[in-house]
Every structure is written in C-alpha cells, then in structure tokens.
Length: 278
Image (cartoon, rainbow, N blue to C red):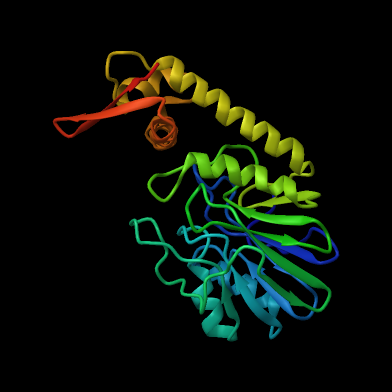
C-alpha cells in the first residue's frame, strides 16, 4: 500500500499521491493523480487536508495549469479550491444540485461537456460523461496512454454505491459500457491500485449489477416490501454493517425496475414499498 503523502510514478506521464483519508468507503484513501512533466493537471485533489495539499503543491511547484475533478463528493474535490487559490490553476469538471453530499466549494468556470479536451505538453485529457454514481460524474481519458481516471465510476476492490436521486442505476450501467467505446488500456480508479484490464473489469461490473438486479426481482413478490424487508435477502452476501449503504444501491435497483415497468411502488405511512409486476 502506498504511504500517504508519497509521490509514486505510475507511467512516463502520471504520478499518484494517496490522501490520508482511509476508511470504509474510501479504502486506502483518495487517489490524486498528477499528469504531465511541465504543464501539469491534477485529477481529483481529494479532501482539503493540509498535509495532502502540501504534498500536491510540493509535487507541482509552479507548473500547475488545470485541476480536474471527476465529481464533487467530499473525498474528491474540496482540495481544488485551495490548490486554485495557491496556484491560479483552472478548475475543470461539473457541478450538480446540492443533495447535502456535494462539495459546494468546487466552482469551475464552465461545465465540462462530453468529448471536451484539455491539453499540455505531451498530454491530452478527454472528458467522458459517466453519470450513475452521481449525475455530474466525468471520467478523464489520457489519450497518449489509454489510461482513464475513473474517480468513483470504477473502484478497485469494491463496488460503487449508487445514491438516488443524483445516482441512477440505469445510467451507471450504460456509463460503464460507454468506456468500451474508447481505447482504454488501464483504469486509474479514485481508490485502490491500477486496473489493467478495462474491458474485463467493465464486463465483470455489469454482470454483477445485473445479477444483483435479478436477485432484487426474485425477492419481490405480490406482498409489498420495504427496503428494510428486502436488504437482508438481496444483500445476504454482504456484511450487515454495510446494509445501510447497500439500501442506497438497492433503492437505485428498485427505481430502475420501476422505470422499466417491472415493479410498482406504494407509500403507506411514509414508508415506500414495492411489488413485482408480471
């Protein structure tokens, strides 16, 4: 495991610093990537933790031109405002509505659109819109190396929590498949080590989500069931300590089934319940 604050070269163009925010949802910590040799871009500066910001600044010196954020969750983007203030670098990414889980300090001059590029000496980053984990999620493809900075679209060692309404399971599965339209050789996730087989990883993740969806459909019946009723059956292979988080992805699966006309929701005394439609 890479020590926090250490600068590790991953390729001729890419270095990584791991933020000191390890945890249940962040694994060993948030990966911050520095791309380039002279004109630099930082991808996902992570939390506004002073030692982490200092490590990034020591690495980039006076050469930072851009700060790109895959999304605005608190473990990925709060460091951006501090870096921009210290360096004058331009903020790149997208914002979304405040759902009480967003970093509101991240304010790019414009929304990054699908296919937009930024570049420096010897590198080009192309934005790939990947809504699903949250609706403002963007992956950045380093075209010269086929390395995609995936944020929380793909994580090494665990699956991503999909949190409605900003998160959407149908969008997430479609966004996973979108990566197969590009020449991606390696995935640089927001948490964990590099993943060398993008196609294999995407196919595995899509298969996992569809198998979980089938399990949701199998657990539903003619009697209305709540999230609390369903989670212990649908996620019986997951540590119960994770069931509160699992209920968020479970809700995303149920909304997908509902949108497809395969389930029906009713609300009784403030509790949502679902039945399976034939």
